[in-house]
Length: 258
Image (cartoon, rainbow, N blue to C red; front, side, top):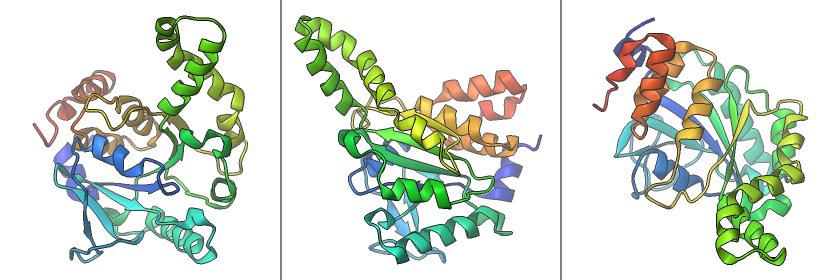
């Protein structure tokens, strides 16, 4: 196994394409991953700053500049041109010989405050037409705490006390989600996601990003990419320790940010 610094020199920064409709909680999720409340800076392919962005541009947070994000920018609205640009971007960046420009994973964000329309034509088209090759796609069900409110209401109507409802709502929300068969529908598509993660209350300082980071790490097929992600993330030292124990690779115990 190559040392982390050699992997970073070869592959550059960890690069993620974030897909999802407007107000899906994408920016809030990325802020929590990078442990900041600031907006990202935007750079074009040549490294020049921009005031707005398209899918080719890089979104970088000052708090963790080892992550590079790309935003799908509106293909979800149904425009043919936007969908084609997104699809071409995925095909190009999944296999480019310029290793430092490759995307390493795709997070497809689906907001649960619109659970009644979780899977729209945009999701159907993406997962039926977009072959992402070896780049894993993680379905990220954002704003999952919106289902907690639905769960609370159902439990309250069943006669439980407010305290009981509050305690049981998160687990009951998972039952509501399972009955909706949203994940089942995605798994039956031609190009299904590699895994799914539910995230809640990402606007809070103590929000838990660990499941998403662990899921993404497991979905990566190359150990070098796993090391790159683990050494890049700065919110979960426990993940570094876990990976070191599983692989006997002590290099990740001293990530770039320590």
